[in-house]
Length: 242
Image 1: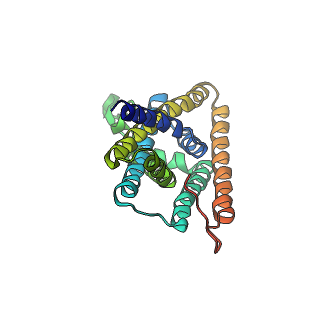
Image 2: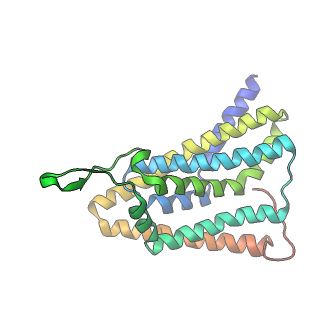
Image 3: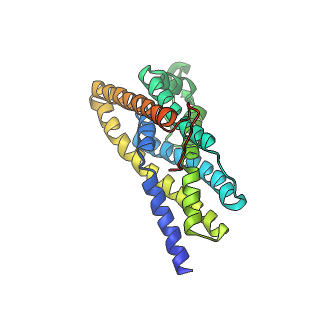
């Protein structure tokens, strides 16, 4: 029991480390760069981590409990979805579409103003004040990212823990660690954007553009790596879960 508890604790810590993978950091930076406030960024990080955990748990549990095997081309396609997501987010960020969508779908509350004129209420810091678009976007992006790493995590767990239900419990704690790690990362990323947004709007815009360029460039690099080097776009696909 003690050894299993230690393994589960390690799973939580590895989940926190998993949150720092380069594609995760680049992706969440592109999203957080357009968010006002550190607390909201932390909530977005938690939502991203929850989406990521859902995919890891579902796909991983299928592999562990039912022995599902993922073909190489399907595995590469799951990883390619992450590259496509990074490219899309980079383009939307650079063109300003992310900010336009956020402003369009953001929930707006109104309170009576002077002379019967309605005025916007102070923005809420909870989920109710974020709007459906702001809530579901990190969830969906996290779900897509979970596809890329689910097989590798499940195979690693199977090689370490031979009891299926303990292995599933490990997946849950791994996911909880990813959520916690992503909250910390998004909070730290949001701090410079919040500070520069209040004092140096030009620098803040420059940082937002830089995050979009990094997301686009990294997505194109992954596209070449997955599509050409690993063979997704060729007749010889070879995939090693990682």
